[in-house]
Amino acid sequence: MYNTREMVINIDPNLIVLGPFVLSWHGLFSAVGLGAGIWIAVRLLQGTVVPEDDVMTTAFWCTIGGLVGARLFHVIDQWPYYAQRPLQILMLNEGGIAIYGAIIGGAVGGALYARVRRLPVGLLADAGGVGLILGQAIGRIGDIINGEHHGTHLPDGHPLGVVYTHPNTLGEPGVPNHLAVGYELAADLAIYGLLLGLWGRLPRTGMLFWLYLLLYSVARFFISYFRQDTMVAFGLTQAQLVAIGCAAVAVWFLVYLLTRAAREPQSPLPSAASAATGSSAPPVPAAPAEPAVPAAPRASSSDPSA
Image (cartoon, rainbow, N blue to C red; front, side):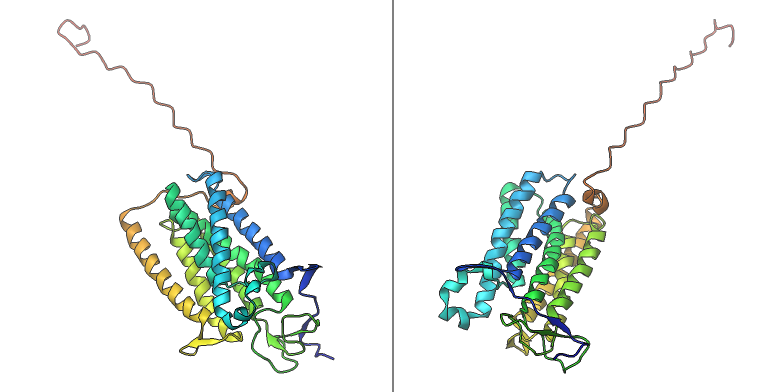
């Protein structure tokens, strides 16, 4: 019997099991989040200088880089487990990714393609940042259902406690925990709303992406105190150390772009509202030219009105 003040989650983390193939809730919502992130990025870039085909191809390389980076960071973080089960490294459908690996790997993959194609990296990064944080928020729904990323323990009956009860849960059965991934879901949605409102309003392209990285890094640093992650150095986890580094880099780029904006103003982008509806402001027609006024004839000595 569990305290009625606690939230109880009794859901099988495996949505579909067909022989060796397993589709978890984490895998499903990660895919949904990926699709939603690409969708909002494409919508935001409508009406800009980037063709839709290039947007989709950039998203493809961001996805490849993100998957490789996310899995690589996770495997490194959990190496004692994967050293004994090397084939599990390839089982992406069962979950197990590190969000900072996805961010860094996706950014590298997209930036390399944009450089090769001579596309505006800053503009693509801004749209990618908005799409990333939306995808992260949706992906955390799967983490909540599965019980992944254990939160710190809470006393019985605590109003913030969540208890996992399903026999297959990845959480700690019967133990009240902080729902740390739920806190991150709320933070991601708040950051997404802010970034969407700032789309096209900052003085230079690229600033929105670095603002995304800064805000997410700060949020993740503090939320990590509610997670049971392994300490790596200085009493901090891998995610917290990476968050400090990412936040420092983001602040540097924001200051650099802000000072550059004072010297080199940029043209405004389409607003988020017009991008979301798929419309853009029609071009303003030029005012018709005023008819030329003929010059008055010069007076001469033979002019009777002189």
